[in-house]
Length: 331
Image 1 (cartoon, one colour):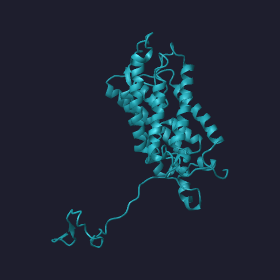
Image 2 (spheres, rainbow, N blue to C red):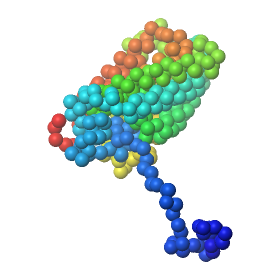
Image 3 (cartoon, one colour):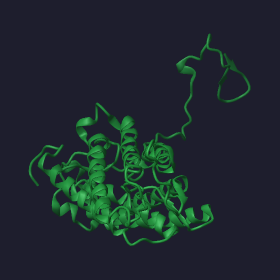
Image 4 (cartoon, rainbow, N blue to C red):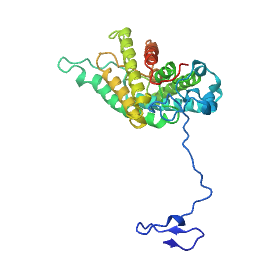
């Protein structure tokens, strides 16, 4: 029942005698609020959720955010107008912050002394030494780190956190040129700063990071290039198929998508990290390896992490346009 002593009634927490709806009063200053989500068709893990239709009612929005809807024309994709949109710069900043954090934690959790592991034994192969245990632990941790990061940054920036994903969405015409340029710049800067912070946390620059080290005298660079290219191609098919495909909206949806993308990256880094002695496995994220080399020591093969990834993005983009998930009039 109502308690006396005030202009507005208060009520006992009594489930057996709840207050009548007519007695409840609402504060006049209370206002409804909507989630601050800018539509972006290239949002990783969203599978086409929170996007708009390309029609006259959204014309003003699409001029500033042309990638808020699918079927973006080349003219809209290469328009420079979004550069003057403050919201895009905010999203790019958060991409840099997110990349910084995930690069720092994955370097710190996957680092080891800058020496080659012991050779595999004849009986157990690589399964009883650091060459296997390191990628195993790193893969498990990366699954959680990446999945949680996609949940955290998905509604803010699209949670690419990786130049490979951004370049792939640009080639697939899910990302405008201004967004791609700003995202890659901020991701690269965030990765470099994350590597410097990892060096500070480790207390040394003599370390190597899983997915970013190679002994070319044992594993030729062209072999590592093939692994990097194929794993990136697999990652893109997995990520687009489970995190960016509108046909999966009802099957996977934004709840399960981030976990599947995280699982894809983690399993690929683990599966390639112990097979060849002298090779730390696929990078999948050139900004992460850049951070590792900025914090540690630069290598002569870092170009491979960029060239192989961009090549995989290009092949994936061609196949994506042959069998597109969106259907509409040609643009």
